[in-house]
Image 1: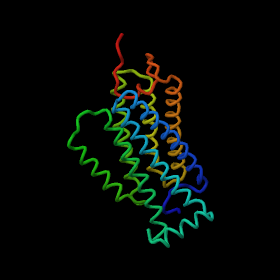
Image 2: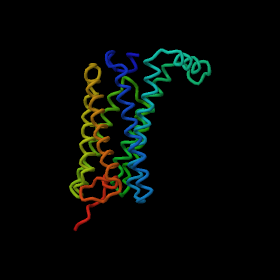
Image 3: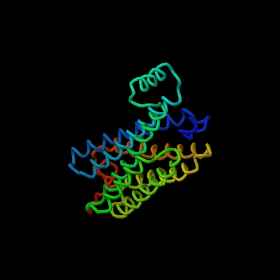
Image 4: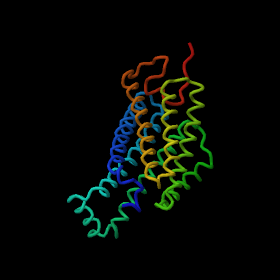
Length: 247
């Protein structure tokens, strides 16, 4: 277990709770964005929902994998035996690595989707970037874990830059919350680079928790204001590249 997951013993289980909370917040945000897309027919909202949905599935993959890894219960033992006996995988370790592969792959793909969201033109280099993600995700292992966090940090930085430019134009409160949330998440990725020291893994998880708590605050604002078109940008339509209407 130590060679697969850098979680310190005293933090085992708590990281799963953080990821369960993250999954719930992200999947609700995904549903809200898709519902708003159906009402407004704005593709930006759809892709925002898809991006958050992918990251939500990544969190779910991590939760399921860690639950099987941490808790040696009868159902978990039965699942492990079934995996081996069915010859789907030759080793339970491969099952763990496969679970974390999908967690990393879906996270990067979701972040890339959100990063591409505000851009209207497709740049040739984007295809190379996508190919890089696929290759990176396929090669990631515990020895190369830092590549995942560096890539996630770069993507999050690009997302923050994009939304900062949008915020200068629309001055929407929701856009500002997204900037702060993604910024905290980016800092968390840098902290994860030091996760060989257990306390830094916990700090990174807490940064992730804070980031998704900010998204929860954003959702509360959205649900509270519904489709109301107020000047402060508190509904789901005011989270992306939508210029404020001048009076």
